[in-house]
Amino acid sequence: MRPPMTASTAKTILRILDAPQPHWVGDGFLVHPLFADAAFTQEVSPFLMFDYAAPVKFPPADKPPGVGPHPHKGFETITIVYAGELEHRDSAGHSGQIGPGDVQWMTAGSGLLHEEFHAREAAKRGGLVSMSQLWVNLPKRDKSAAPRYQDIRASDIPNVAVPGGQGVVRVIAGSFHGHKGPASTFTRVHVWDMRLKKGDRFTITLDAGDAALLPVLSGRVHINGETEVAATRCITFSQAGASFELEALEDALLLFLGGEPIDEPIAAYGPFVMNTQDEIRDAIMEFRAGKMGTL
Ligand code: MN
Image (tube, rainbow, N blue to C red; front, top):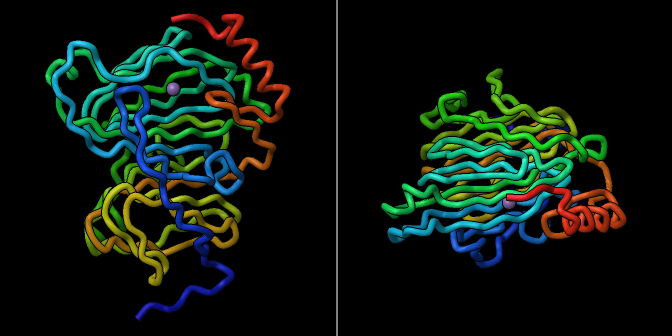
């Protein structure tokens, strides 16, 4: 027997977002946009957008699939690799390659150009590629931060056993049961890569008022013992309340996203996310004038 959670402590489900059909990003990533129509709204703050590329088998290619040079400004992009190898290069002089379990945490901040491809050598062999990309907003005070690139290796990320269960919670940012993630963030953000086993059941407890989002990438889960959610959907929770119960009804791959909402206006236009339309116009001018650098 489990005591029922009381209304004052339990987070409740706001919506279960149903992603539209997957679409191609460049020729490298077939993504499910899991925030659906809640992307770039306060409902998902401090996050902006979340794309999940389920595993796709690519044929061998001399020219790596991916996305050529494009700008970003005013936020951060976080790329998590599940399968395959990705290669990245930006106009701030950063470059790198990440593989399964690795994370690239890129701060676009004041603005940069970058490109995102399958790694050249891996593309020649072909094979499965699966990844996700999360956009985290920056508060007004940090939108002009210098571009930065955190290359987070799988071995840097704590693997925390699910309490009383068989699965693993990989803490990329924030903290889970006292284990801190390696990512340095501008606001308080939790990003946990959760690989649950059927039957895992535990409570996630957050600071009061925190955002909580749960994209289900594969498998099926039960929330608060009453609502079943399957891939590829994303649960948005009330900011009110501190905790919810999560149970894996089958082996499941999820991301938990949480932290402090950024309570500021969002002006989003393609790869630029600012606070006002005037700032968006300025960003477009900076990009056209070549002020975000060259590749
Ligand atoms: Mn990009």
